[in-house]
Length: 152
Image 1: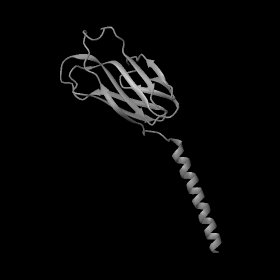
Image 2: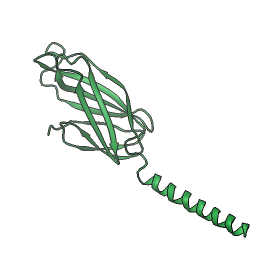
Image 3: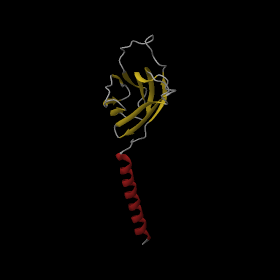
Image 4: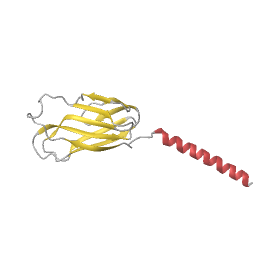
């Protein structure tokens, strides 16, 4: 009698573990990415940049799971206090919001903004930066690509 109860308990435990593992693996990285090393340069003016210099985003793998993003000539308020980057994943889509901490002045200028996205896997991601049309990036340990983003 005790043997039957023990066998049933083991079978139930195995089924529970199998079902739990299956659920965990359906969406293994949704929302778990992080960003760090957010940096930005000073407001550029016509004395230190060409006025027609294109906006570009450079994606560079710094490891098998980390991607450095350098957004050159992105336009913000000329007195932002600081520039902030927020980032989250939804499956293979990475949603990014770049914003000013505050808009203290009535002027705009281009900045260079950079940050690192962590906990990525080797795959193709759709990048959605607020205010721009989405685009795809194939991420692996040798990613090195420049995108010229289009405004929405």
